[in-house]
Length: 246
Image (cartoon, rainbow, N blue to C red; front, side, top):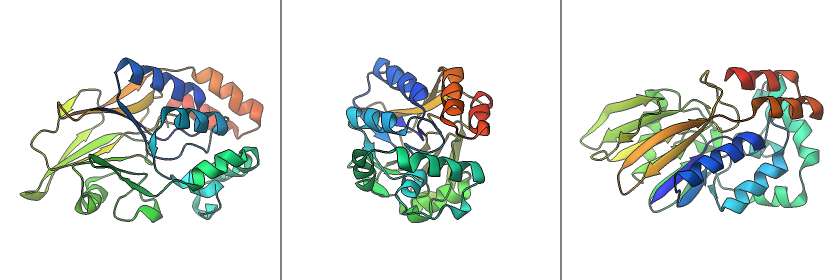
């Protein structure tokens, strides 16, 4: 089975469509999305439609929870908070219904999907180092787990006989083999707002038969999204950062 994993989309239609086209070229059998369909970007409803049309196995992200009033935005920065307030009145009833149906953790026989850390999913912690990865891996029941939230891709691998001996693969576009590892945690980065200084959209591709995983990148129309952000009246910084990948 070839699994295509969409990272945080953040209402960026251009990035999402570019990634979906690339995934179709990769002959993906199953689509997964790790939360944060909305927030920051100018087209939340369109992105929800695309995720639904793909039949994605999807979990709840912190920005998704925030627009549902399930998460206090006090800890959000001013720009993220402004985007949440902009997004709420623009969502359709069907959008709210879809987001309300998302769970914090989605189990599948072959993998687990969660937005942030698996050990404390309701706190939306970031997997940004081996410390958080180890805590999540300790709670991981499936061989594979897919996360996002940090917008920075990485892959963590562990064998049961050496649970503290964690293999970290920093982001690269080189395919790796996870054969022989009992637990694999893949942070797929972000479709719509990368933060690893590479502005291209990121997505994950896992082949369970070949036991391979890779985080791939694809270029998209950044100026087009920037224009939409500014025309929508969203904070200018949300447009500027897309070109920088921060």
